[in-house]
Each structure stands twice: as structure tokens, then as C-alpha cells.
Picture 1 (cartoon, helix red, strand yellow):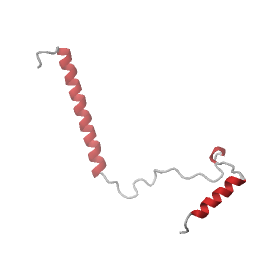
Picture 2 (cartoon, helix red, strand yellow):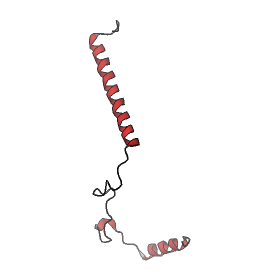
Picture 3 (cartoon, one colour):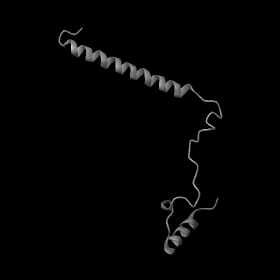
Picture 4 (spheres, helix red, strand yellow):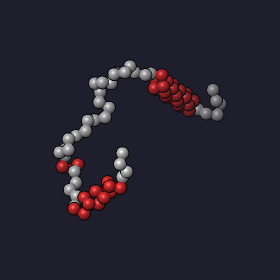
Amino acid sequence: MFPSISPVQEIGLAVLFVAALVWVLGLGHMLWDSRFHHPEPGAYDGLPVIPSQRSAAGHPMESVELTEAEEAAFAGLIRTFPPR
């Protein structure tokens, strides 16, 4: 094929070309599927996409005890928000 490279290098180029071609075809197939494949409504009813929220009394590391000064500062911050 190329007179300046060895047969082993030619085989390597062929393998690289085939791998690149497979990758491009796979990427194109994936993009085509995501663009034109619209599942029916309710197709994901059994699969929760977002996990359900835990109760207020969840894991101990999910809550923080505030000091009185922090609670007062938070209440002041909340009062600065405009009412809906």
C-alpha cells in the first residue's frame, strides 16, 4: 500500500481506521437514537429518575444544629425575600 512503511505498520493503520470507523458509526447511531426516539408517555413509570426525598429525620449527618445567632440571622435573611 505505502512503500515507505512496513507491513506491520500497514496492519496497524488498517486496525486504527476500522476502530475509528466503528466509533463514528456508533456515535452516529447513538445521536440518531436520542434525536428521533421518543418513548411513549408513561414508559418510565416504574423507574424513578429522581430518588424520593428522605424524611426530615433522616441520617444524622443531614442535619445541623444552629446557634441562636445563626437562627436569628437566617430569620432576618428570610424576611428580606419579597413575598409571593
